Image (cartoon, rainbow, N blue to C red; front, side):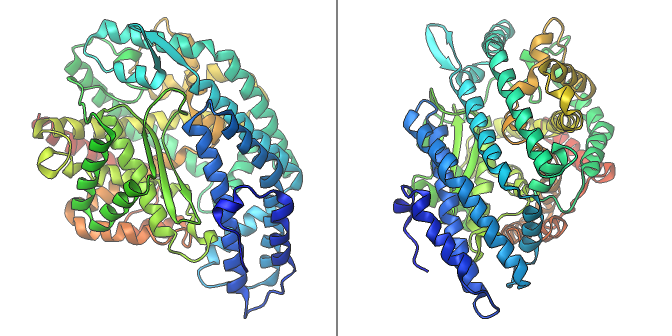
Length: 567
């Protein structure tokens, strides 16, 4: 089957695309031609997926680009829904055939689950949900403040929060928080609409609640909501006490009688002074990261350099740029693209390591023949990224081609591990909040109830931070958590993957070459194996229990003592 190239496909309307799907729909399907048919369908799906990725990326690169937003909306309204419906027909055709091409056992299992969930009446609702997500992005992308005569994005302002002058930190934090609170009602309005859409999605799909819908939508075949909540409880049992020990040492290090919100970063990260400035220019940033990857693993180094050469990186923050960091992919090109908001700090280095792990996953998994095979559960996808933060840490010093002196490197590694440990309790807040929201849909449609629940969970999992007289900022933390609004139930993945990544890192401490071999081997499996099997291929265990989590916490605390000694 001859397909258009990507450049032409970007401008094709549904009338022009539909006959391609029609040809696949009417073609006879049998044992002799199923692989050719699947390859043709895969190639068409790659075109759809890449068009979506490129249009969505454009709206993040410049949230003020009205043409980019218009093009994405046209695609979401006129092309994507009928393409999804046409894909559903092809899924049903393949499933009805009873044929199982090589390497498609797990993808077909997921396909059946998605086919069971599909309802044509949900297509416009899914489009509306995406549009509401764009509105959410625009609210935060437009937020700026005046500081010392300069207009700054909130990302730029956050970088200034890491100052040893506590009074200045408080002033900056209050300025930032006040600006975010100005949009409280805008976010609440978007939230109400999202909750309406998600309730209808669940009802149309004959699900008891949106949690059941989302679980099936994410094809979580290897664990249940109860396992997710077990992990939350395990965090409370073994991580919250360890986090308290980190906060106690941190408080002593900072010379503070109590921890206030401006003494931590995003409620879950420590500060260290003087602040570790990592780089001045984007070229310096990427060249040093390249040097680290070439020492760690030559293949990974080649992948990263290819991204530099082909302009697949947009790393530096600027006004109007969308929030956050992510790695997307261009399937027809078999290439990743990394988007982030760097301002020159050590935290940016860790973010690029993280997103590079996703990028390496794209390079490895796109070697599989069908797009349907290439995407694993995100519970493993995040192992690829989180492990890369830890695997690169021994090479962070200038002597290894990295960014810092030996003493600074010890500080970097100490801060990194502290923040990984402190992340689990914050993750538990986000995960527990989302379980509550969609088990109590009517209550949670009221933002005031959400405020109350978020505040309660912060007290349960993050008790060290003193929010006295700051209740309005504390209770609206859920508004500023992008995943809650744009990717509901996508957060347990970070916690589970961190546990897998720490196990992989422990293996690397014993045999780095073998750990990296298994790492790359597991990435190459894409979505052709179950989550437990993907973890096993990487040499680690897929787990929710307090014992496994406790072993990871013990290793982190042991290494923290070593890094303390080097400072």
